[in-house]
Length: 376
Image (tube, rainbow, N blue to C red):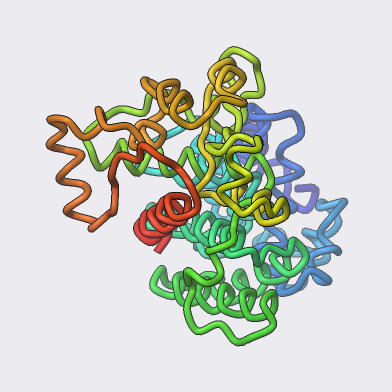
């Protein structure tokens, strides 16, 4: 702002504008304004990871060296930038930070992306939006949903590669930059198919297939598995007019003994269950870790059911999460909303009193059918 005369700074209240916007961003986290400028510059000017690196540090220098901004030795452009781009994008960034921190049903996926550390949603939203964008609200919803969808469909189809994902994000950013909201799904689908093809070594023609989902489970990080089942829980709650029993924080992030949730294997690691898999330990380990063989249980519930036979485990699943309870017969008695959900989405829910290979496969397929409605 040294290029602008003191008279103009005072008349236009530019110092106050700068300080207010910086304070707004930094109220979320100390020096968050530095992160804002990094995202902003990358969003608007970097088409590749390589290009993004020049915006890592010293944004004051980069702002004035970036030719497209035309701020160097041009006081009119500096004034215009502060009053328009800077004000709009810092306000937009603060909205994302707010929805990122606090769950808001209208912008749920921004919060979900925070749970999974998908912070590239900041870059992509800033990339797509233009100052005073009439499509801003729609873009906030669509981009955050697509980031979550891209991440989750790669994870559950055993095709996740963090380096390839980062490269894809910049391709998407270049494609949707300052564009219409209708471009967004096309850009994400193109990236998803390319990433699936690269990971699997054959050309992917569908964004979701059971052949890629079938073995999913053992290779997934614990936190992602917790997130996956939290989303299943929300799907059931939303479609049966029920409230979530626990917060997403407790379901996904809380590691405490009392309120934290842990992965539960429906099939305990014992000789009786090993026999169900012809005493093939490798197959047993792989199968019992598939998503269809897993649940989320709260703290002590998980410990108490750890090595019990299935009949006893089934008793311990009462009054836990909705997904767990669907194994039990009492979940199906006089539950009109639950029956309506089953009919509406054609879902193969049923009580399961004995649990072996075929039942595990059945539950895995049921999860896949819900995935199609959550992420497709």
